Length: 259
Ligand code: CAA
Image (cartoon, rainbow, N blue to C red; front, side):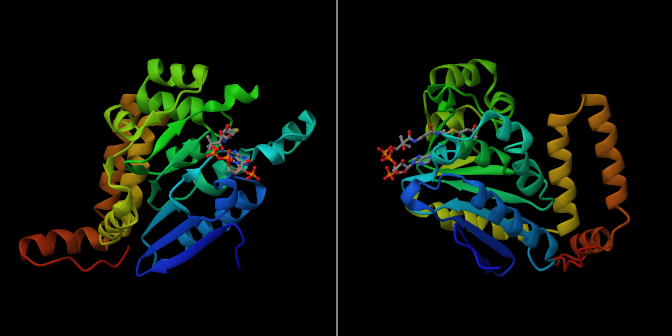
């Protein structure tokens, strides 16, 4: 499939997906969602691909939100009947393999929400995060009120949602929203390096580690710890576990089968 709103490249075992509507600051419309859905599904289905990076085009924006022009005149009943925004869960969040958001410039509204769907965010020192939907008479609709609150706590999330104020990269790192900050010029290289490191790990273990950490947001502590233990026990049945432990003992790098 050829894409119009995103670019997809495969760099060894890493899939690089670039939002590509710079004239609209990468605003997220229905076509972007459909194309991202296809790109993430292809990534998930390709055993040769082991980590992905999602980034924005240009330095100005990762994404400045859901496409306001697409939503401006849409009847309320259509939002409900189409279950508008539900596709982000099924097309993007459902990705089972790891992926990183590399954010430079604005990540606002749906752009901030999309970044927070990633397994972690690496931010350029130019990154700015915000949920300014209130200024449009609405509120976050792609998970922002929930993921931002879990990431940075109620006080900051509530202030950001109620005032629309942006958080810069330093505050975002201090608050736990981003894994680390890098100079803007190095953002893509750093994100690709992190992705290559993840891609070098045993792939089933990567998927299980992702699932386990995400479970901390979905379930209570006792259930989460029990599920973690069971998943750990299941991983011990893999060929990669046998190989990983043998490689450690024999002081050599492991060679992964992905099963
Ligand atoms: N939707 C559609 N188009 C957008 C857009 C968006 N979210 N954000 C920017 N654009 C467009 C602008 O309309 C403009 O297009 P034209 O040249 O055709 O006029 C182009 O991108 C460049 O934008 P600006 O001229 O506004 O650039 P700026 O540097 O002056 O300002 C900005 C940058 C502060 C990010 C400003 O563009 C802005 O405030 N954008 C909207 C941010 C926003 O409110 N996001 C939330 C959207 S609602 C949402 O996301 C709902 C949800 O929960 C999922």
